[in-house]
Length: 514
Image 1 (cartoon, rainbow, N blue to C red):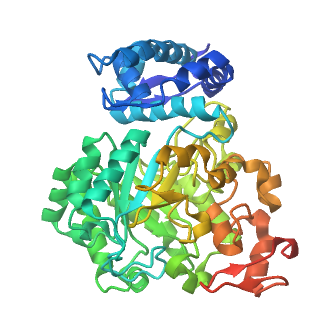
Image 2 (tube, rainbow, N blue to C red; image 1 turned 60 degrees about the horizontal axis):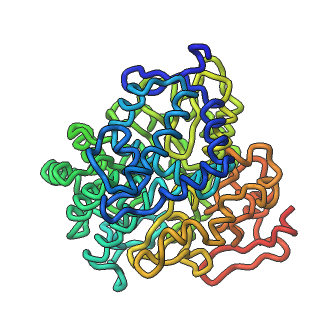
């Protein structure tokens, strides 16, 4: 194996990975009956060791745990054999691997990968053994009136879980092998027990993030309290380059100033800071300058959110940008990743197809839904096939304030897309066997151009956009230039066979939509 085909550490980051070797190793494990059987025996939560058996085994292997029950000790030998076989194909030494795995979240993530191999095999796109991230909207209470709010936030709901129930739910997520929980809302900083939730999630081994409008975090004393709670990642919304755009969108005077102050305080406090912008016709022209602005603030990530016509967003459906504008936006975002340390990401799954078309000797970044890894080999497409595009129901789930579970936060609270409840249903069973999730994970059954597209494994369109526009999770995403017919029909008015639903969504019969 050449040096170009190896993983090595540079400043604590992985570079020059042999992805074909990695994927080949995973496929070998998944396709070997004995390996699958052995992995299946490691998937359960161990009450004695208070962790997933796979995770316990990895900790023993890595020297991060001194002892464990007899069953987990035996299983650790199996895991050790499989992992050592894998890292040998990466060109990584055991010491290098242990250095990487010093981060407990890498251990938790690898555990989920191994569990996913046992449960689902190595399919395209890949499905882990548990969601990598769960976004939990812990309250509908909010101090703003955002025009695009998916939650219809404002006053707290009467059916919201109490603090004890939320803590119980966090235990369930941890035991299932979830890597990260993002606390959102409404506005999570308004919840009286938010710090208890953060501390508890952290104690349970979960990576804790929070999505906020930043209003309260504009105070340094408030920021310090969240730092003391163990919060690690903060996402702050900023929907314009000035108060004129942002405040009108948020419905609160002074909101922009507060958000910028919050960003500065969080950067100074050492949080991993992401600035999130929902792209609409209101702010589209400002995005290039916003990239420079937030970069100067010192943030690590700048996230461009797809506008989804759900919740309050149903009232401003005409603010959705055209497929051509989205294409141009993502192309510019891709090029921005070559400037400085800030990564520009997007929830638009078409981002990966942009990377596929633009990759060159100067631009070597593959944008995924939440991360832009850099590779110098020609295996970009092969890796992206496994990472996939839209992660709804595959890499992440969302939980409502009442505990109801959905494929992602941008789905309306319709019974047909509700998976169950965190307290009344078996979370592992839902993740492994729910019929709706099977649809999200099979890109071969998508309808329209999305189903026949050569890039369906790395993109597949946004399933929330498909559902909110067409009432069908398998429908084409009208945000793609290849689905321009559907976009025109939406903009022209109601075509033949269409109907307007009681909640304001437009249901379009695809056989008439072209």
